Image 1 (cartoon, one colour):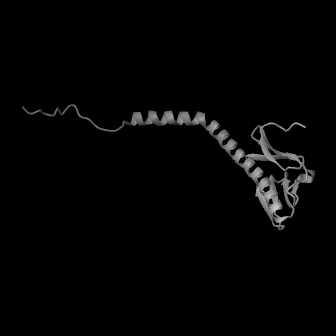
Image 2 (image 1 turned 180 degrees about the horizontal axis):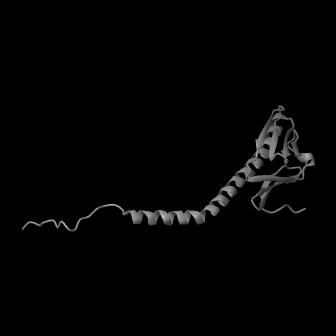
Image 3 (image 1 turned 45 degrees about the vertical axis):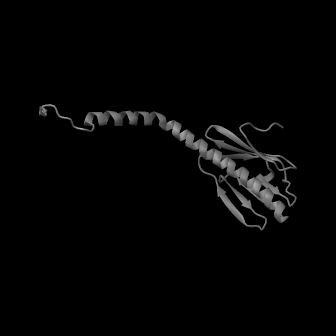
Length: 156
């Protein structure tokens, strides 16, 4: 016996317009509430990258001073939110800091850190960076020139 197709019941694969609008509305609603979290996450990630870049630049300056037996320096330009690295041959490169991060302050004399030919820094000190409402610290110890990153200010 053969089955006959019922012309009244038919099946159309896919979504109706109402289902599509409901799904899009739900995604829009979720995105609207997660957007502030995403912008904070972006700011935090950029901040971490900048802090790591500055600390790496300080380590490179120390190594270059040791290898070439000449002084290197980093000038932190707080007014223009950038730092300027001068290598052992005297060539300077400017490194602007993204707008999400503010070069807040340093306690180096004249905001300048030098590494002498022995690899020792001109002084120990701290660079303070503001990332949103948080502060990050890049700390360099005197004599050894060890560079570390901290969420807390150094104790004196």
